Each structure stands twice: as structure tokens, then as C-alpha cells.
Image (cartoon, rainbow, N blue to C red; front, side, top):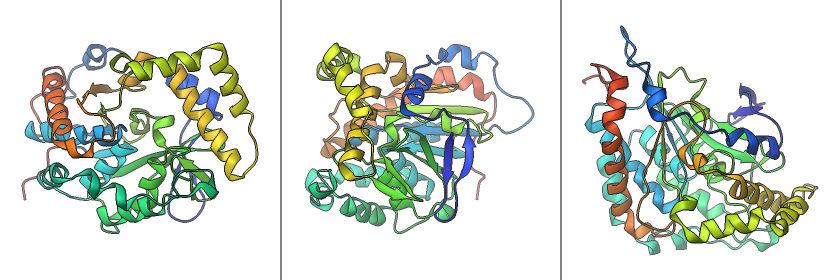
Length: 343
């Protein structure tokens, strides 16, 4: 089952999702329907349409989400709910908190790598990870100015993955910073985040573009925006995937998957197993999103660590959404869904 978490108390069920990382993987490999088939029914009539936007991961490539949102607002579309994974959750949180896209763009384009890395490095090999992640959370705390989900002007869903059972975890209340840290915690790079008794890591393991998370949010159109590297665009990623799919790779994944225990090193093995399984079995369709909905892949022309090249990623996101707009426009009809009321 997928679970939704608040800041306190017990979790409540959100949407059905199979337990276990292997079942989760198989569920995510379903090929999404072509965009034309999803839009064939045409616009809904007689009422304002609700739009949900799901923003995927990609580290610095995720700045493309800013450009995609700029293009949507240019056409009068403002999301009624935002879901995010990893860097998509970070952009989504700042947008849902009421930050203008102009200010986000301006700050991103001024950013340099030296403005990021010194604020996130806190070595933590004693926790079976390169970095502890505490500085990362403090950095997020400053970005969102200490806000909680309840402070957001637009409902926000942050997606993470349970390290021990591979379950998708949807966080929708409580402080933003720890949720963002959990969603962006790469196994082996950052130590897992303990939240409501569960060890949480990167949401991109199970939900590269979390369209499925919008299923129960009452939206008429779920729009996914991807910024991650696809195997067809990266020789290195294609080689890694090929290696993990071979006999030695399968043996390694099986051995890691059998790791047990609540210790740090057992958690690292489980995290690597989840990551390797996702990389090895992800089809080309997985990069195009999951489940029902419309997906736009931005393909920003930068690597995932080039925070100093945000402008290029933002432009790629804008261009990709503009290119997709003729297909999207038909589903919106005469009105602009998600358009904000005039003040």
C-alpha cells in the first residue's frame, strides 16, 4: 500500500500499491498510454477543470520544471495540486508555497555550484552513507523559510520510498524540510531519513515522475514533467543498465535484496538493491511517466550536477511544454483550467 504521512500520529492509507520492492518495480513498468489516447475524450464541459502536476527528479536538470511551469502559466494554467519527487519536490514546494516563478528563475540563474555544495557536505560514513544529510535538511529549511505543508497555497504531495519494503510513501503534512530531504536522499550518498518510524530515501526509486500519486486527488488532468536522464540519451546509463541486467548484475541485485536488519549497512544494501532493480528493469516508457496522465519529457542539455547551468535547463523546460501545448490545449477547451482568480 502507498501511505500518506503527516508530521505526527499514525499514517493513513492513500492509494493501493503492492508491498515489496519487486512488486513495486513490476507495477511501475506498465507502459503508459499514448498522449493522444489520453486526450481523445476532449475537454470536460460545464465546470472548471482541476489540473494536477507531477514533477520528477533529476538533480540540477530539475530546474527544467521552472520553465515548464512558466509555459503553463503563460497559457493561463495554474496547478490545483502539485506532486514532486526529489528535485521536483523542491521546485514544487517553493512554487506551492507561493514563490513567483520569476523569483525562482532569477535565483536559480544566479546560482553557482559553490553556493550549494559547501552547505550540504557533512560526512557520515558511520551511518553507511557518504553524507549524513543534516546540512541538506538545514539548506532546505532556509529555502522554504521554515514552512509546513499546511502553509502552502497549493496542495503539495512529496514522494519518498520506504527503504525496508520499497513502498511508495506520500508525505502531505508537517514540516517541509524533512520531507524534501527524504525525497532527495540517494541511498549510499545521504543517510536515510527517519520519519514516523520508517526509513525513507529517494522518491525517484519508485516514482521517477509521480503521476500515480495524483490519482486520488480529484484532478481532471494529471500532467507529468520529467527531467531525468534517459538510457537512450546517455551511453553511460545504458551501459550501467546493461551490466545490471546481465548474469553478474542479477546475482548482485539478488544478494543485496536478501540483506536484512535495521542497521545502517543493512539499510545501505537494501537501498542499493532498490536502486539497481529500478535502473536494470526500467523500460524506455518508464522515463515517460507512469499510469494515466499526460507526460512531457524536458531533456535539459546539462548534467545532473551542473547547478550553475540552471538557465539552460529552465529554457529546455519552457520549450518542451510549449511544444506539447498544441496536444494539451484540446483537453482544456475554451477555459483555462487551474487559472487563478483575478485579485
